[in-house]
Amino acid sequence: GSDYAIPKELSFEGHQRMLRSWSAVQTAKEQGVDLLSEDAVRELEAAWGGANVVRSIVYKGFMLAGKVKL
Image (cartoon, rainbow, N blue to C red; front, side, top):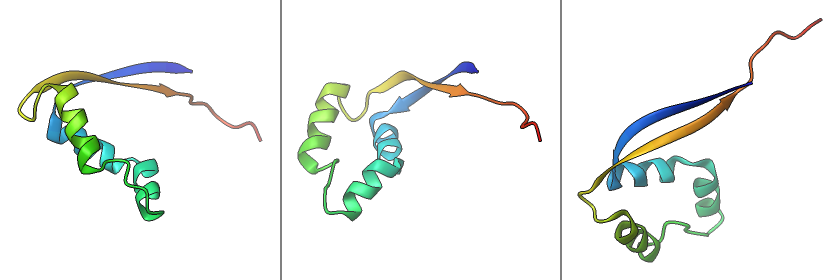
């Protein structure tokens, strides 16, 4: 296995687009649960520091690669 990190500069709006793309958020919305309601977005924006703030984030991932023996 291998760990990897992808650094990125991200605005609050970019962060919101990323969250909205997650399958769990989409599935919840399809089932009538809005995980990113207006109140939740306002709270996240305040914690982020405002809509115009760009933050440095790091996507962390794990990859396992190999060949299947037949």
